[in-house]
Each structure stands twice: as structure tokens, then as C-alpha cells.
Image (cartoon, rainbow over all chains, first blue to last red; front, side):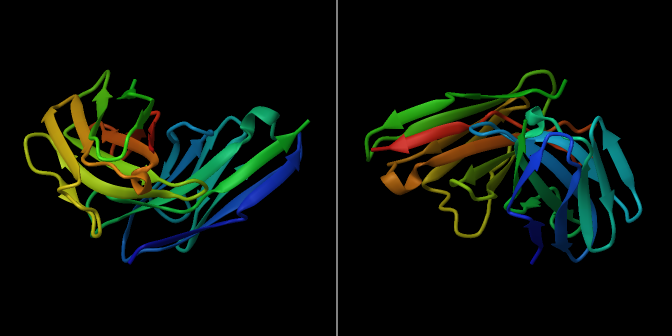
Amino acid sequence: EDQVTQSPEALRLQEGESSSLNCSYTVSGLRGLFWYRQDPGKGPEFLFTLYSAGEEKEKERLKATLTKKESFLHITAPKPEDSATYLCAVQDTGTASKLTFGTGTRLQVML
Amino acid sequence: GAVVSQHPSRVICKSGTSVKIECRSLDFQATTMFWYRQFPKQSLMLMATSNEGSKATYEQGVEKDKFLINHASLTLSTLTVTSAHPEDSSFYICSAMTGYSYNEQFFGPGTRLTVL
């Protein structure tokens, strides 16, 4: 059974204080690893897809990296508007398009 | 591009009534749509996968007679919660695959269901 574990559960940063969120996963075969941002009371917003170990993708202050066991979402010089829950999900080669989500990291960026 | 809408955004109903939630892909055709449920401070749990023109595939533990899914066109899927009870209160979110963005699912804004 696919498993996704995210840490920390919650993170509070000062504006400009860089940090990283972790997503550890277990799958029989990785088709893709996805990062989403979710604001309270809203649906997830797509950020990145990573397909193979060593791959990196960047978008503004966010950078996602992937190894064979985990992914990191690096946040550089965060701003208050980056406050949200960040969700990680995996897609297994054996289960078609199904996504298995972690429980997320709730990020709060303070002024 | 890749915008998904849901209607209604919020619904309150009495126990025993049925509620229909619509999920639409606004600027693309979605051969596959997904329905998720999310409880407070928990992750998204896949309920079912819906393919246009065929029966939905339900995840283990999800009652197909209680959560009726219809994917009548390439832009519309509906979830009907039949005989709703307070324990069905949750945040229901749909997603859709575009077919050209490999494996990526784009999510709707969600529907908050409260059953009194």
C-alpha cells in the first residue's frame, strides 16, 4: 500500500526565513510525485510534478526536489502570502491515476 | 487554463435528504474526474474515479449506493449524497485530468456539506 508522510505537521517562519518541508513516500513504482498548495476552505492548487530521482523544479520562491525515498519543498525568503497547507501526493505505476496524499504541512509566515 | 468549478460551494441540508454536487471542467475536456473527501485537518481521501460514459470506480469502504456518481459528459461529473446523515458532513472536492498535462490533476474549489 502506498504511503506518504509529511513533516513537520506545522511550521511557523518569520518573513524571509528560509526552510524546507519534507515528504517521505513508499510506493511499489513511482509514476509521479506532486506538490499542491491548499488555502483554508479551498481546493488544492497544483504546484509541481516530479517524475524521477534527481529532478528539480522551481517556481518563484519554491523549489521541489526528489530522491528515491523523499521529496523536499524548499521555500526561500518566504512572504506572508506563502502561508498555506502544502500537500504532497504520489502516483503509483500500478494504480493508474490514483493520488495518495500526505496529511500536509501547515505553514504560517509571520511579518 | 485547466480550471475546474464546483457547485454549490456550500450546502446545508436536513438528515435524510439527498444533495447533488456538480463538478465542471471549464476550459478543457476531462475524460477522467475524481471525487475526494476531506475532514478537518486531515488529508484528501479518494472516494471514486469517474470516467465519461462508464460506471465510476469506488475506493474500498465507499458505499456506491450512497455516493452516486454520474459522468455524463466530458465536462461534467456529479456526486449525489443520498439520504445524507450528519456523519456525511465534510468537504467534498473534485479533480479532473486534462489529458494533455501528463498525470496532473486539477482541483475544484470544494463543496462544504453540513448535514443537520
